[in-house]
Image 1 (cartoon, rainbow, N blue to C red):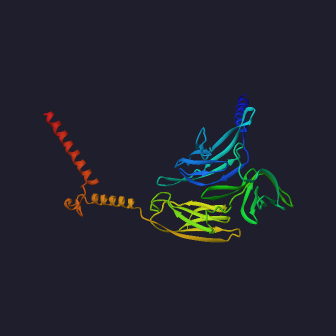
Image 2: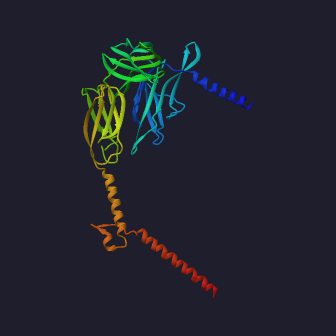
Image 3: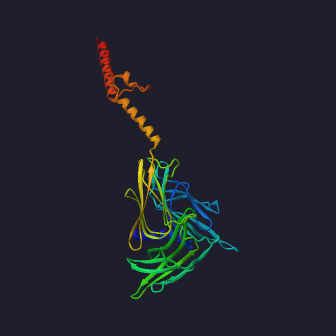
Length: 406
C-alpha cells in the first residue's frame, strides 16, 4: 500500500511540473552566441532586445542580468542567471484582439558558463545566449524565417542569397552539416537530433547570427543521408564581421581591461580578427595555450590571459585549415612594472630591514639617508620582555604570600 501511495504522489508531481512547462511556446531561434563579457557590458540582439551584465559572482559565475527592449528595461521576476538555472524571459502575448486570453512565449534564455577569470576588480566570463522569435516585435530583414526543409546528401539545399547547406557523414549519432556562401565554406559542425546548427559572426557591434536550423531528425541508407530541418532562419548580413575599413586577413591587438595600460599584476585582453572560417584556432602567449576554439567563423574574438609579470611577451595565433595545415601569426607586447606595487614592496622591504636591525646599535638603525624610522622591538625581544615581566610577577606574588604568612 505504501508503494501505491508513493507512485500516486510521483505521478501528481509529474503532472504539476509538466503542465506549466507545456504552457510556454517556443518559436524559431533567431540568435545564438557565446560572448565573453565583463561587468557593465551590454549586447544588442535581434528585434530591439539587448542584455546587460550588472554584476557577477567571482566564485560561482552567477550573474545579475538586465534585459532591455528598445532601450527600456523589461520587468523580470528574477534577474539572476546561474549555470544550472538559466535566466529566462517569458512574454505573455494576447492570442486574439477580441479575447483576453494570453499565451506565454519564451524570448530569451541566458546561461552563464560558470567559470570566471579575475584581475583586480575586473571579472570575465562567457554566457550562452538563446533568443527566440517574439511574435509581437518586427522581425527585420530575414531572407528565410522559421521554415522547414528536407536536406539530402546527394543534392544539398540551395538557400537564398547564394547560401547552400550540405550534408556530410553520420558519426556516433551526429550528422555533419556544412554551410557555404557562393561555394566558400563558412562553417562545418556535427549536430545531434534536437540540436541547432548555427553560424554567428562577431564584430565591434556585437554578435550577429546569420543562419540557424534545428535538426528534427535524420536517417541514413546505403545510398544517401536525409536530414529533416525545422525553424530554419537566414538573414542578410556582413559575414566578414569586419570593423570599418578593415581588410587584413588577421589582426591582433593586446589591451588592458582597466585604465593605465598593461602593467604587472594585471591580465591582458587579446583581440583578434579573422575574415575567414577555420576548423580550429588557438591563442598562445610565450608558447602557453590561453584559448582554443573549434569551428571559428569570421569575426572579432577575445582571449584573456592570467595575471602577467613585467616583461615582453609574444602572442601567437595558430590557425588550422580544412586540410589540417597550421599557420601562425605572432605579435609582441610589453607589460610595464606596476609603480604602486613597487613602492609598496620597497616600503615593506624597508620595514623588514628595520625589524631585522633591532637589537643592534639603535643610533645607526634609526636614521637612514636622513629619514627617521621608529625602532620597533623584534619578536624575540618581545618574548624576552614578556618572560621577564611574568617572572617578576611570580616573585612578587610569592613575596606578598610569604609576608602574609608571617
